Amino acid sequence: MAAQFGRLRKGAVNTTVAAVVVAALAASQAPGVTTDDAGRRVTTGTQPSPDTPAEDSATGNSPYYTDLPPLNSPSPSPTADGPVNPGAGEAGIPATVLDAYKKAEAALREAKPGCNLPWELLAAIGKVESGQARGGRVDANGNTLSPILGPQLNGNGFASISDTDGGAYDGDSAYDRAVGPMQFIPSTWAWAGRDGNGDGEKNPNNIYDAALAAAHYLCRYGWDLSTQGDLDRAILSYNNSQDYLNLVLSWLEYYRKGTHEIPDGTGTLPSGRSDDNAGASPSPSPTPPKTPTTPSSPAKPGGNGGGSTSPKPTPPTTTPPSTTPPTPTDTVHHLEDAGTAKLTAMAGDTFTEKISARAETRAGKGVAKVRIRFTIIGATDAAFSAGEKYATALTNSAGEAVAPALKAGENTGEFVVRATVVGRTITGLDYTATVTERAADTLTRTSDTALTCTPGGEFADQVEVKATYRGAVADKVAATATLIKSADDPTENDKGPYFKDADGKAVRTLTGLTTDADGLLKLPKLYADDTTGTFLLRINTAGGATLTVELKVAAAETSPSPTPSESTSGSASPSPTV
Image (cartoon, rainbow, N blue to C red; front, side, top):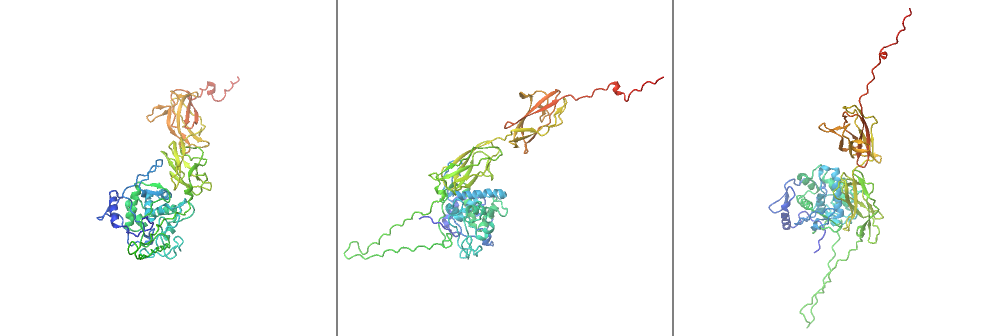
């Protein structure tokens, strides 16, 4: 029998099956989780509070899917540049949904780093709340293809929460319903809602918005989700149920062992339905009446075969082919480069060129409104402008998507940026980027004071230079300084001025020098031996900038001794006349 998509009441899963499955999972439980005598998972930490009003939870304590993770753990996640191992079916998360979870984790890492929110927690909650947005039935913007609504919270088997939004989110002006892939009730969404995809709206039926809202909701009290107590409290605040807590922890543990991306719309749907068909729509469609069977007819007298004839066989029913038109993503056949120039940047700089990819049909026509993911691959500390290793962009009317600006890290060398279509498994498009070492093309002294010293003394002024590259400050640029023999002979001099090492010994070459954040480099003090003359100090940087500084060592000038006549003050008086 085909699996049906619906929502189960809490505890509706078969007890025997649940006990067997959970007992098998107990060998690799999440921290703080044990099993009781019946083989059920129980937490040893925070327990639900019976006094907590349903409206104080994210979902209004609505029903949720109670499917348990498979007994077999999924295969480890493939590396970004390696082949995809299908692994267990349940470990596959639809591409756009997975992208939304990871984006939300990245946003919280920046906004609330102390929360330590793992995206796998969002995946676990998304699994039990909506089956990962109904198996990833979302468009390229993350909007669900149809609303996902929980049952009416009218107190009939569920909490009673009167309408708070005039039906704006849930289409119900009498009672509230949980809405969207993360199942927020309208009163919670009113303050917890977020815009996760940058379209200026906060839509609970958008997986990007809902995932970001759930992430902030779980981190709202300064909880540290890397600790079991705070993790339990956060999950219970989402739905105040011990069974819910245990189930989410099971999926969290399962996803942490490995997941992989699958096309949108191909995710595994939860099985079983609750007894009141809650969750599909505000007004569930009525069940079609059964076709009456043909009554039996008595056998003709003298006929063969006895007292009655068999009823006419009912022709087998067949599922009509889907009439849902293909989404833009479905029509993409391949990716093409859209004129990306050579990607080269100096360490620490932003690449001037941006990566542009074009989604095309088999006939080569550009496809608009398709989400393209750009992923940085390789041993590099380069990142996109938001500090992440991946980014997504929507194609424009020409089918082109432009990645955010790339910023080079300090690691030099080549790495790859791979463009893929979110929601499809077509071959990706690779772009090679190169990071070169920091460089300077100009060096100048910051002072024009002459550098002089007497034999055996020390120079009064230290040499300071400024490095620039194409007129801009060249910071963190490697440099060397050498006292050379002459302008034509750059080998190290063996006499004249010198620096001192840590032991006070004379050295005439300094390596490992680096300009500071302002491009400045100040050399240590210079000393002179007994050799007089004019000497040269040459400074070189990565990138070819060179500066030669003149140093003079000469004895101190002395004033000449005055002559006897000069030492007599005044003028001689003439001899008196006799």
